[in-house]
Each structure stands twice: as structure tokens, then as C-alpha cells.
Length: 273
Image (tube, rainbow, N blue to C red; front, side):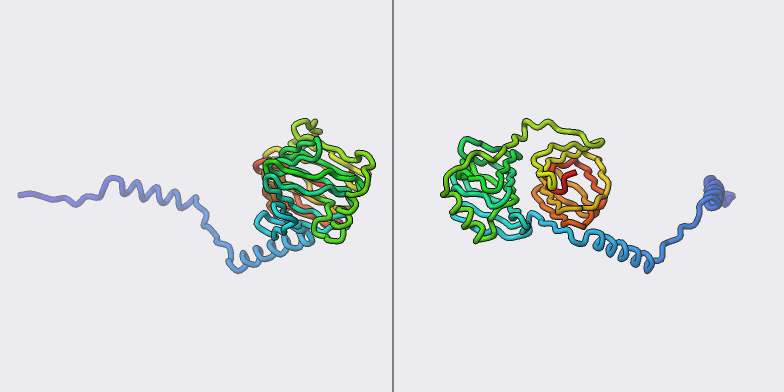
């Protein structure tokens, strides 16, 4: 006769004891009130909008291109009191005629190359022309994209004045060129260096280079400050600015803490400090 004995798995009592010990030392999870969480998020968003009020950002996909002549286009970025800021695109073989500047004009090649007389400018090379100076015809053998500030493009009356002024006799060279591959960078803090390009004592233009992980303190703008992203990307407060994008921070506005994960190179024109 076979006798069967009911048994309990040998590990059951051990598991029960382990569960008891764990339950004594695990604090209950208190889920946040969903309504309060939503209100906090809404307030955070409102605070961010208020903090960035007045800043104007132009994304790569924003704005519209306007034709100057066949093979030459520009996209307005900002209409300033001393000339406009634009992106200028030339097809291979295209050119712009000789002209005389109404305002201080600065330009940076973003893609391709530009030729002006004996000058041959490549990517990130910088050129500045004083008000009243006469500019050689601008050509591009290979096609180009450039950033210009202080230009008459976008203002038909000012543009006509520049073109007519180009017919007047040349009065000497009042321009300067900075070749990017010859820069002597100046450190200003850990992870950040600059190269001064131009200043009149009130406003200053400079290249800024930030290493990955660099953080810069928040600051107020006593003068209009223009930023053109040349490479990498950067957080200006809560606003992410990527390569090829532009931002103008009018006088009196504020930039939150600046940070970059991947590193950044940008052109900045603002108050001379």
C-alpha cells in the first residue's frame, strides 16, 4: 500500500520570509498629485516665455528667400537701425555689382567661397567694410552662402543709394579681412575663448568658441546683441540655437544661462566690454 505525504516546496517559507523582510524596509511610493504637477509645468512654461520675451530667433526653415537677380537670393533676418542682417546665397558663377556702403557692413562665409577683387574668402572667413567705403564686385566661382549684417539688402532705397555710390571714384581701402585659419584665440573662462573682430568702442563683433560642457552665466544686454550660429549648437536659456540659425536679443533683454553639450562656434555682435 502506497502512502502519499503532502509537502510544501522547500523554498516557499524562505520566499515568504524574504518578502516580509523587504516589505519592512521599502517605503511606500507617494504619487504626485496630477493636477498640481500640471499646474507646476504650466507655471514653468509661463516663466520661460516671460524670461525669453523680446528675443527673436530665426530657424533655418523659417523665413522666405527673395531674388536680387538671377543666381542671387537673400533671406531677411533682422531690420536694424544701421543696416539689415540677412543670409545671402549665390549660385556658382553669380555676382553682385560694385557698391558703396551706407553703414558698417560685416560678412562671414558660411558655405562655399566668395571672391572680391584679389580677396578669396572661404568658410568662416570674415570681411568688414567701413561706412562710405566702395566695395568691389562680389563673385562666387563655386557658389556660396554668407551672413551679412549692415547691408542695404531688404531696403530698396538704401540699396539704390549703395549701387549709385559704387559709380563714384574709389577713395582708398577702408576694409579688413580676417582669415579663420589664422586666428589667435583668447581664453576668457574655462572652456570658452574669443577672437575680437571689430569694435568702435560701443559695439563689438567677435567669434566665440565653446568647448563641450561649457556653461556661461546669464547676462543682461545693454545694447542689441546678434548671434549667428556657425557650427555646433547652444542653449541660450531654454532656447536651443543650432548651426545656421540666428538670434537677436534687443537692448534690455536678458539671456539665461548659456550651455552647450557638443561645443559651439558663433559670431556675436553686442556691447563692447
